[in-house]
Length: 164
Image (tube, rainbow, N blue to C red; front, side, top):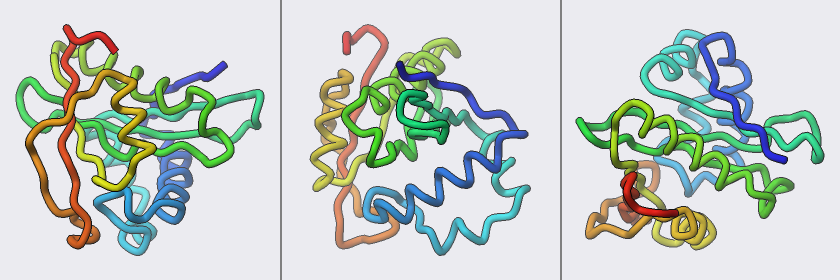
């Protein structure tokens, strides 16, 4: 059973630990880098939490450590941007990614925001399949990955009226 918890300012250390592990594990999946974020101060992490929402997932049957992370923020009126989704390798295939996506979508819809948007690296087939299963649809948007412009990202969106 996957448990998902929203992180508050006091949980910045847990956020930092999982986020840095994600950046080490999958550097081509994120717009940022380990080198950049390892230098963040406690204030930087707390500010990150305060400017949006972050969730950690736990799979107690695996172990007590956080199994995954997702974040989101209002990128523009009517759209929340899903960012930083990552699941620890040992927890993949256990429903952790879907639980995180659904927690973020539920949060967005609870704030009255009807659509969740994301960018995914074009070659990240595992993530794209997860987003497809969660009801996201590919848009016509494309852009270079900020942390590695040689890679391209594609936009995806899911709106509340669309079933997963």
